[in-house]
Image 1 (tube, rainbow, N blue to C red):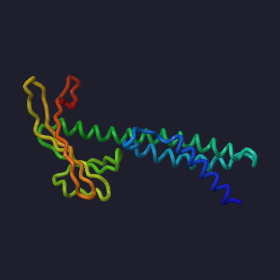
Image 2: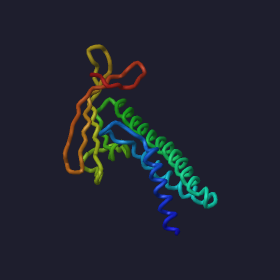
Image 3: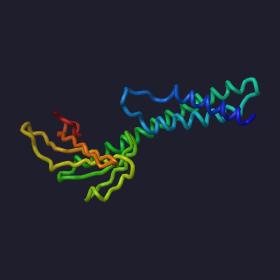
Image 4: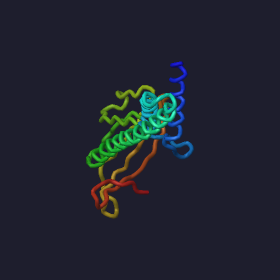
Amino acid sequence: MNNVKLSLVIAIAMFTFACAAPSGKPGEEKPFYETLMTGVGGIAGGILGNQVGNNTLRPLTTFAGGFVGAEMGRRLGKYMDEQDRQNLQQQMTVQFQEEKPQTSVACSNGTRGFGVVAAATVNNVSCGDKNKIILKTSSTFTAHDGQTCKEYKTEVVTPEGHTETVPAKACQGKDGQFHDVT
């Protein structure tokens, strides 16, 4: 009988996870921590909810616990994803402020995991089965309109060794931050 209860808890938690998981556009990757923590919270909440109530109310408390746990997990995961994005943005800001050329490497699994390190030699950084993202900035120069600018390249190297390079240019705005220009 305990196996039936556990199966019910997991089924309800997974149903709740499917309903509460963040959605995106087709082909767009979902935020890593938000998706993960929604599932973890849903399962944990379902298990806790199953411990409350009598036999008649147990399915309802299991479902409610799974739903509340999934939502709490989603919110925590969303916060964690935002911290990753801010850390990457901070590293990019520091790199763009430097006048000399800079190279940084981040290992990424989709939209998460930007453990950015300065690398003298890009080949020294191993990302295992994750994509390697390389940001290379040039020296600062003054554009014809007087703005301080940098050209940069973003390279994504897959674990299979395929490389995609995207060149771009960013100029310093009135707020002191560098913004992409076309």
